[in-house]
Amino acid sequence: MSERRPGLRRRSVVLLAVIAAVALTASMVLARTHVIRPDATPAPASGRPPLVLQGELTRRVPWADVGTTGSYDGREDPDNRHEELRALYRGEPLYQLVGLVDDDDPSTFNVAEAERGYGIELVATDGYTWMVDSRTIVGRDDWVIAKLKDGQPLPEWEGPYRFVGPDFIGFRAGQSVRTLERVRLLPGRVEGQTPQ
Image (cartoon, rainbow, N blue to C red):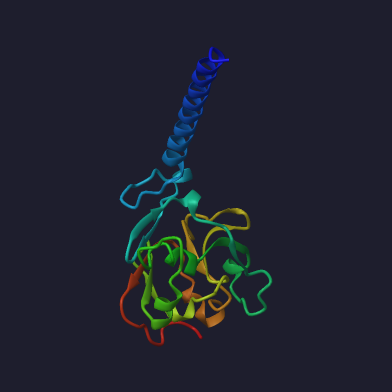
């Protein structure tokens, strides 16, 4: 019996070493392909620039990584009087993107801080800006930073991203920011610049 145990131990050690090597290799591959480093500038997917988020942290989110869990359907909105907004927009809710940079925990949206109030500046490629009060975005899945229109990337005149939602139609359509490139969090409250 004593002759079999050293061979069994040797095989066990070899098997454990192989498992460890496979696990290490897999974790290195995952880390290289799935981590967004705040200081890195990833190559834009499909030639689309990243969305820049600035707050407590700064992130450059590649176009491909901006989610599509939020939507605004301008075709179904009875108050929508603008032909260009008569489409299904898909993107990520504004509060989820703000949650990536609103404090030192990018995995959550800081509701308490948002309810205290700070400004959210939406900046377009042509320099146009619009301010949103953080107190108005809490729980708003329908205020969306869209990247798709009717299932396709936004056209160049409208994208790479567009801020849309049901409150940004009719006479307030100017608040629907097209050619959006940057979302910046600013300390202090913003009064009277966001629809109720």
